[in-house]
Every structure is written in structure tokens, then in C-alpha cells.
Amino acid sequence: MNQHYNQNYTRDEIDAVLAKIKTCVDNDNYVISQNENRQENIDFINEYNIRANKQKSILMRIETEDFCHSLQNTNIGYEYEVLYVFVPQVGLTNSDGIEEIVDIYTKFNIIDMPSGTRTVVISFHKKNKPVDYLFR
Image (cartoon, rainbow, N blue to C red; front, side):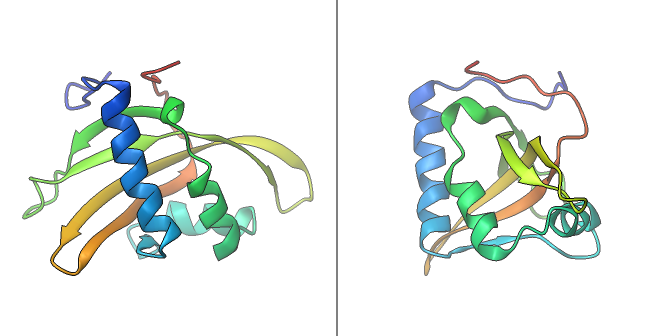
């Protein structure tokens, strides 16, 4: 486990984090990063033809048991931000029409602004490294 990963949370704390994330998703106050630095997200969404309504559905079905760890943002100017990693298992159909169970690596940044809370889904792709679940 990476030394920067934090698993020092209670179930209630993660329940609260997840509730905040889901409120943002439910109210469409979220975005899944799909810029030049997030090609893995773009490729994953395209490979499984995950349209906006399905993306939202996946995010709304994440459970506390899917939580792995948090970590500090390492980007300059954003070091104060805490990022939360959840890895739900979801049934998806790939581009060949084959149904499979996929571990989706999701990493969230919750941003409190004067206009309200938003969440940025920084990572939304197939799990590409081992993870440890905190509550499983």
C-alpha cells in the first residue's frame, strides 16, 4: 500500500463522503474528467459505450464497501485536496457485445464552493493496479 494512501476512516465517515458525492451526482453537479490527461477515462467510456445516463447510474450505485483509500492531491496548487478512491464491480457490455464484470477505478475530488458543492470524477476506468478495500 502506497504510504500516501489513507485508510484511517470509520464507516460513518465514508458514508458521509459518499452521501456528498451522490448528492452532487444526483443534482448533476459533477463531471467525469475527459481531457488530454485522462485518455484512459475516454477509452474506457468508448470501449463500453457508457453514455451519460449509464455513467450517472454507475456512480449512484457505488457503496461504502467499494471504498479503498483516500490520498492527497499532488498537483501544484491543489495539495490541500483529498481524493477518494472507490472500486465498484459493475456488469458492462464491451464493444464485442460480451457482458463482463468490470472493476471500475473511480477517484473523486469533492469541491466546496460558495455556489455549492461539486464533485470531479478524476478517474473512471478499468482498475489497473491492485487495491485494498477498507470494509470488505
